[in-house]
Image 1 (cartoon, helix red, strand yellow):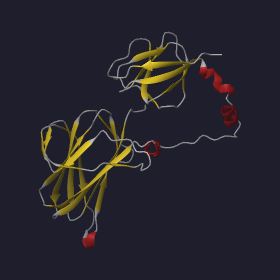
Image 2 (tube, rainbow, N blue to C red):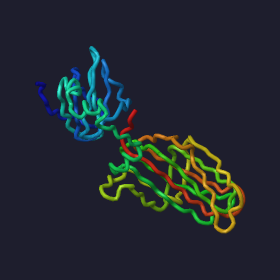
Image 3 (cartoon, rainbow, N blue to C red):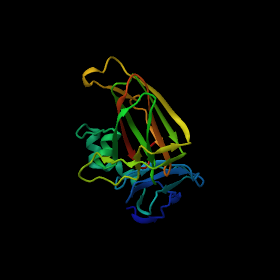
Image 4 (cartoon, rainbow, N blue to C red):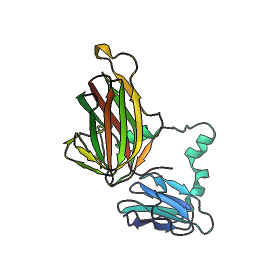
Length: 265
């Protein structure tokens, strides 16, 4: 029988070799992994292993399994364990149609793990030609933007611009929500609104046109293409600017939804 060992891993987002022998591994905290014949590039994120989920891997000749994560963690490793799948009762039952595989999308999983966040802010009575803004400062984790939503009335055109870097001074804190109210994970993002943005490099611009007449309190909605995600760098300042271009003074509401943590390729 294969011997199971527990191996401490250093953290610090440094690739650390685990083993050159195929097997099964579980980790105490979610981390990245890659298989390589030489020391991996430090800038490579790799793939993700979730905490406490058994991961079976097969290494080619000369390959080594490398792991890394922001904080120190433990890896429990069993050499050759991947070969046990064929004798697993659940696996055998699934092959004969007596067990099912449940498939969930990433947002559902993120919500259950307390890692899906959102913010929402209303800018009232934005005059024609005026620009409002907010700061989105990432922390130690990468951020995957899942959706952006702009709702407004009065205006017939809102211009949206996302900027990386620069400076953002002053402003008022925006409360960040978590979609899991039972066991939420603390956010690493800091968000403020109505400060003073300056500089930076624009990387996403979008014009949102209103349709019809927003009489009687009607609103217009603008969203990005469904399924289009943006991965933001950790420890980086981002700015969002919304300009009321035409029409009339408008109430503009902006909403972000995002995930924080290792990306899974």
